[in-house]
Image 1: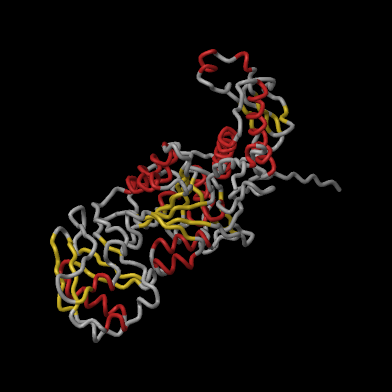
Image 2: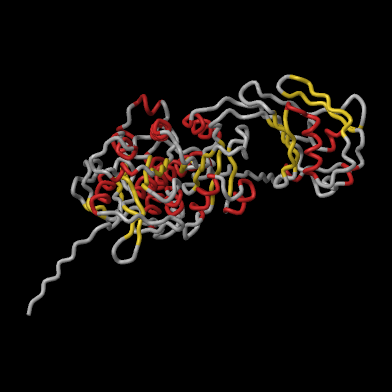
Length: 493
């Protein structure tokens, strides 16, 4: 029977608003190292505790040593990345399929008495034949048998952590290449059993030439926006690499912070200008900080760990790094002159005091800005940017180019300023900056901020035709933090 559609009478449509863009994570550290665990194609890997790092790197790798200091902070930070630096030329590698428990059963392999496979390594086709696995007792034995057949062209290993076989070329650099494995012309196909064929294995990764540190940082910056802090897990970094990396981080379009630990005692010498702390200060970098530590080359990871526990969406959550602890770091015992030298060079240190305490001091960047201010303002910039973008992006109708429309943008900005006051980054105080809008120099900011947008009628016609909003200006008063105190006690008798 023919019927009419109810939509002719009542037409209901569901319209889902777009998912809002997320703010960046300002608590994510990238530890960059050269251990051959992560290949340059994968680039970086995420960790939420030291357990995963131990599983992948063991307990002696520099990446673990730095990561352990980061996660040893209390409270504990939530996330860390480890990235690969090709400090030396790398070898081509083929990573097989992740094998299930059933696929790992040794009986699958011991049944092979005359196996074979083909694989091209460094441009040469290798035909492996007469592979006898009948006597192997574990998967390491299977890998050893394949290595024997590969002869000098490469090696095969069983990666128990990742549950896969991996074949690595014996050469390094750009001429080190590898392909998927293929079935042999005759005999039992071992390539499928090992999970090395197309559709099973990950894409083959060819070798690369050694890269300068700054190139590795640039590569990973282009690969992911998820990390904010950077620490290089290498105890013998050349000063040229440190300076080049600091320069890159400073000029990068994405806000990030680079932390470096110096163990050179010249940092303690007030007359020295040749040490790395002095050079970084002279360069006036606000996105790089240094720490002196005679105990470990990765002490800056602990500073990162404490700073990156801040949740800017919380209440009264911001901190200053001075007076904080560094679990796992041996505090320095310094003379007044040495401590003064470090302070003059804007170089941080975890130091003993004569009341049986040890603290971080001073918590500054190389140009003297306080770490917590740079960190907090990076959050504020991204939070406001994301909030205004989401207003424009998720609005079901347009934001009109009118005073009420601009007022919606101002209200959105004000809501993020309110959060800056709530988390303790900002606070009411006297504005000592230039006058604009209705605010004058010396005026008290009762809310901790002031937002001004000029009337739409004052906008240039060209800007209106380009659909630009008028320039919105915000005055922000930082809450600061008390680092020093003088107390005078007058006594009368």
